[in-house]
Figure (tube, helix red, strand yellow):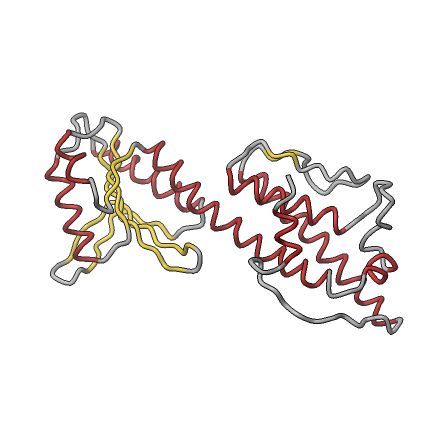
Length: 258
């Protein structure tokens, strides 16, 4: 039982580490009244805010009782943790379920925890990619359409011949991020350009992130090289301004593309 319990909590810790969280097992944390032992302690950021989760890993043959839920509620209240979970593969007694109602304690299986946490943290990561593409859109549109065409950042509006086009890649990036936030895998990442950067489909979050990194690097490098040539030719005259992604018209239009 001891070995099974140890492996169970280590699996939980490893899952959160893969999500980029600070995860530790067998942690003693200080409360306002006393110290408490937690099986797994998770610390991370979500939408710029620090979060702390406590997890009790119950690798038991019997169902978790009401007393264990009440004990964890006291720990959460004393330490100020944002949320806590009891993870059990053999279920929970009805009293435990009642005790967790209307609280920040969730009673889950490991699979349920993985699904919830992946959605939670993956959405935050993808929203950060939206911030990054928004920066590039601001930079791209700081140059006139004539200059963007002249320096190879986009094709003529009435022409699509499959040649490199930052505009088309940006649309594909935002489509991919939007689908990833919604969890609509597999995601079609085909830009229909002659040269593709990365896979044409993402079967999961990690494939999507690899594709996003490759394509963001590609457009960032292309814009930088074009701007260097603009400066050489005295054509570097951007209209410098910044709009965040909520007020950037181009971001709003791109996000509306199906």
